[in-house]
Image (cartoon, rainbow over all chains, first blue to last red; front, side):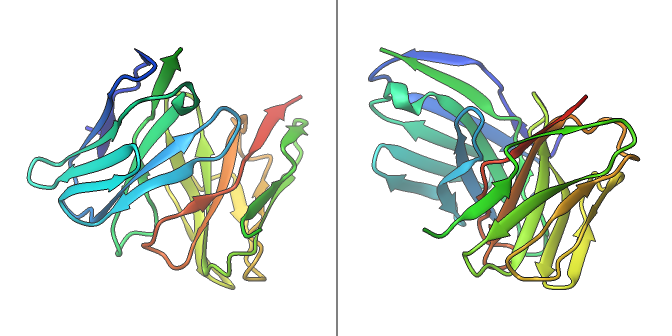
Length: 111
Length: 112
């Protein structure tokens, strides 16, 4: 079993839709959780970062963490064609030298 | 602007050749990282460095080498021992290990 599981998609939605992206994990030692967005031929860009269970909102983006279920989500409201990218979840802890990434979900928002 | 610069953007390697990928950051971050990205496999850690003159192997260090002589620079050498080097290589940095990492725009390495 992989430490982090992410549905690779692809996911295709119409403009304006609410998008839900999800990851599950098995390592209860993970302490912080991130979502990155990666456009084609570019490096990942940090979107959201949280330590605690619960919701964190930033504009159209909401990150949700449920440590008891080992489940994290990223919601995108009013999705735009410019949101079309690969979304990567990542997790780590202060005792780790690395982040553990999901495989990435390819999202396409069509006009 | 502060950020991470990787060069070159594209690189070609001949059989038996070592190649070096450059990574420079002006974020004053102590920690730097090298990842490899292959389709459908996410990012895998090659090496990381917590501080100058120190580095640790990641999950897939075989066939790679690094140095950290300056805080700003963390070059990666892909040696001829790496039998499947074709991939997208990403460099990242963070203020310290355990904090969010910020990435450069990658180097795509191919075999001639």
